[in-house]
Length: 371
Image 1: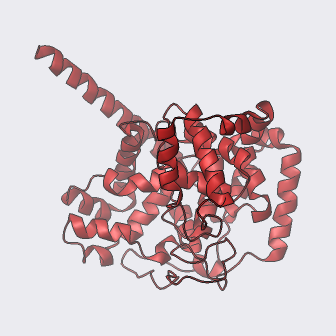
Image 2: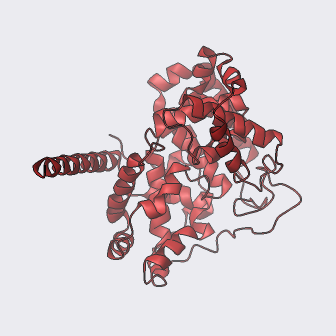
Image 3: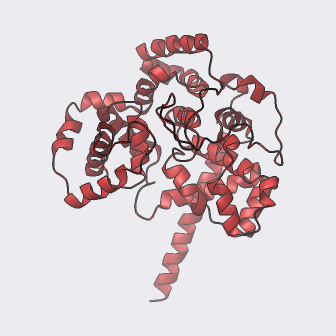
């Protein structure tokens, strides 16, 4: 298995890449979290909130974007060949950031939604028009107004954004073995910001079926397993944060459930969300682990831990991560710097799965002996 790639395959602000950061250093001042509501949407469509993006933030040069667009169009023309023979090239270009004009098309190609759409013409629209269980429809409608309420697409009750979101979630609930889960809603909303309802549905289905299978099943066992993996990997990445969480008996599900189930869409600044999703569609859930480890390492650096004498304060700190920790430049740079290999992830996954199997076996044996 390969190690984490060198910085040459990541687009990083040179001013950020030249800095050395310590666990105790403050990173909160690098980007301020906007709180006011604007009458003019930002470049992503947000009118305010923590995910509003100030236009003064560093942008990728236009000439760089144009070169990348040409490269992506060339890849689309020979997609299967690239994925089979030149996957690392695709991966590296996803890590550099997919051009916004081609992001929807790229995500569909990466997850296979484009092929599913071709093989199943009209299925989405047919299911969207088919009446569903009234209780299901009511549950979905209750959640519509909660999805990015300060984004221009979802501002209006009954508007095209909320109605498309309803249709995607309704159809997905009809075909998903897990039925409807509230965490599906922000995922579908992110997709709808990039593409029409039909391909958004197929992308959502791919995420739930292929990328994070079991995440939304009753009992959340898959989330619990990945939470334990994240916790153990933290011991290597940030021993101080690991010891603090262990000392106060703070279980991973208390802080990482929303991160992973919503793929950080409710947590990160929007430019960071898009960059993380670019990589996620190419590389899978391991990207979530890298994001989570950076957020934990710097969200619970020693300077912060001094203000966290117990569980309550620690969870509050994790719910209010300094914006600079999650800013695109800093986050991507620190993900690249993590001392974490593919083998580390795989070994820890195997250990946690084996541990749960052994616990289940012992529990079954004890129950049988007690009869």
